[in-house]
Structure formats: C-alpha cells, structure tokens
Length: 381
Image (cartoon, rainbow, N blue to C red):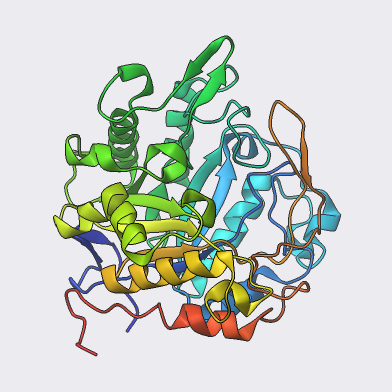
C-alpha cells in the first residue's frame, strides 16, 4: 500500500499520515551539485522512463543533491546533457531539477532534496571551503534563503516529503581560519542551532516537511544529539542522518566492533526512541560480488558488517549511487580534476546506457533490505 503523505516521526520510526511505518529505502541520483549543474542520465534516458525504472527496482525514495550555485543559474543547460529529454531544451539547471522532481514524484517516489555543497563541484574535501553552511562566497543568509525558496518551490508536491539540509559537515578553511563544525556549542559553527533555524524557516512555508540533520565528521558522528537534540517548533519532524563507507572503519573490523562504533555514532538515537535514523549515503563497488561478502575481500568485511547492522537495527537507508556514469567534477577552489562527463561510476546500479541493471545479484541483495521488520503497521515476518 503506498504511503500516505505527509510523513512524520513516531519515536524511532518515520510514519505516514495513517500512522504506518515508512522505511526509506532509496538511491542517490547525483550530479546537479557538480560543475555543470545537471545530473547525468538525462542524456541517455527519458526522465519519466528513468523514474519508472527506479520504482520498478523496488526503491521508494530518491535523494537528489544540488548546490546553492545551481539554484542561481540563469543560463540554459547545454543541450548535449539533455539529449534524451529534448522537451527540456533551453531550461536552466533548477528548471531541469524541477522536471526531474516532477517525474520522480509522479510515479510515487519520495524525493529528498539535499544541499550537497555551496559552490559547484565534487564533494567532499577538507580544502574545498565547503564544509560549513557558509563561506566567503555564500553567507549563511543566502543558505537560509535558498532553503526557504526550495520549500516554496515544492510546497504543493507532498511527495517532496523531506529536506536533507547539509551534506557531510566537516572541518573547513575560510581565509586564514580553520573552522570545525560543533553540535550545541560555539554559536558560529553550531550545527544543531543551524538545523533548528533552517527547519523552523522551512516550516513557516511548508510545515509538513521532515528535516534531516547530518552529523559532523563527514556525517559520521551524531554523539552530540544525546545532549543537544534538535528541537523544532513543530514536533515530530526531525530525522538524523549518518553516512557510512569502508574508509570510515579500520580494515578487518570485527562485527562486534563495527556494531559498537555505529551504535555510539548514532544507533543510540534508535535505541532511545529519540528519532528516526537514516543512512543517507553508503555504497560499494558493484562490479564484483567479492565486495558484497560473496568472497573474501577488504570491502566485503565492511559490507557484511553494514548489511548486518542495517538489518538488525532496521535502519532507513539510501544507496550511493544510482548513476552508472559521472558528471564533470572538479574540487571547488582547488580546481583539482575528479571526473569527466560520462566517466564510469563503479558504484552505480545501472548499466552505462542507464537502461538496465549493471549487476542483478547486487540489486537482489539490496532488495532483501527494503522491507521494514518492525514498527507501526508492520506485520511480523
């Protein structure tokens, strides 16, 4: 049964308007935040066909990263990037983003816009000056205003059900200063205060949206929530988010040590029924099943651990990435090259033409993790 909007929280669960649990199980479709302000795939597949494909694969949600820079561009997207969507010819990046949101939600998918970065480019690096919600080019007032504009833009679309406010907060250099994000302390860099401000501003315009709050340390640390939870004027709307990748853990980490690390980082939020927890990014090289515990490899150790943790803790999640191809990407400020348009994305789920599944066995592994195990309205297996 499709989830009935709007979404809210009930203890550790996201629930729909009927009070039934909704376990977010989605994919990241990335690229709007990078150099050209447009996501790959629109050159290979009609956006509506792509949306249907995502839904048919079993996912219920799409995280759609953008940059603040992208939202301000008035020049049209170059036509070659929209070759399979000729009706978008002449559209600006935000208009193309709008069209993708409409295509995804029209098929019943939940869309979660995410401010991935301020300047355009690949994310994330400590020297990109984009580790906070402001820098020398983007004062925090512009960040707040951009989120209000996004809320206004999609207020009539109930399936744009959540906003992921800031991607991977981290230490950053601003001029001669090096600033480290805090949680509940030091007002200038206080993430909890920022999420409270942004969440309340968004709710003035669109009061039903979930507000997703990532922790510092590249979204790997939510320990500050224990002392300083985000409290919005509108209750039942806060979701916390971690990201997790193999390099967040020591090589060969035992299952128990992995569980302990993840529970300290954010799992305690679930145990304490404080709020839902969403793994907004996690991923692995999909080209070989060796990376998914079906043979011995360093990546398989991490996969076996996160698969077990997500399953046992019954956590919401979003795979990085749907993309089989990459956008043009450079690291902001530094200009370091990361990718050309069309370069292969080893962690992508689709074939290079965006029309099929790259590794069906990997998809089947993920599909086993989609159904919720516990929560309101969930029948015991």
